[in-house]
Image (tube, rainbow, N blue to C red):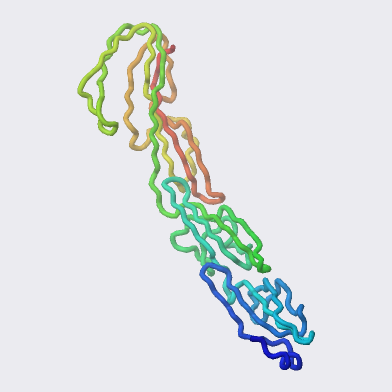
Length: 302
């Protein structure tokens, strides 16, 4: 409760009416409430540091009472750091997807938004500049800077990208039928197995026969393998295209065909069809996607 008017009006000004009320909350900027008796209603300015707290800033000034126009009771609300903190982390979210980059988003409040530890290319560090264990392959790739309502304070949103933990290669296998028309095919009877049962374990209890001759359209297997992985070595662009068998290559059925004039393919067999890579800026870490395809050595001309 404010002091009686008879005391305030005829005594000194520039003193606290009540004790300061500092508050610390988890993952939030600190706040402070002070109540003063001052000679002027304009004794404080928004954005200034309040008495005794150099790392706090006044964000609200509320007049409480006026005594004979010579003394003013004021309450100021402040936000910032109650101590010598360098920053307050307000949120953190990590993501380690099955494939692709691991990412981490950190939001924080600081008085020093241009400190090297908050700039692009920096890693997760403590106040002494030591990279935290487990984050040596994560770097800041994106940052947003927003001024806080507390003067001189900034809210930063940082995105770290890289490899948090070792990650296995992600493989995709794609198989389709490629139609090939052949003219002048010598009459023949082809006997193929007839499969039945579930897709994961089919059986062939019977066979089926086809009589072919003249103009024939064959369905040939067209198979590709795509591996996605993260590497500390540059992508092997010099090997596209070239003969290269992927590790644990899937089986391929090669149908022997002859027609009129054959077309020969180079390179044939397994070869690299496509390579896509993305590098962490300025770092020796690449996200690489390699696609292999199987090419017959020759096919008859239509």
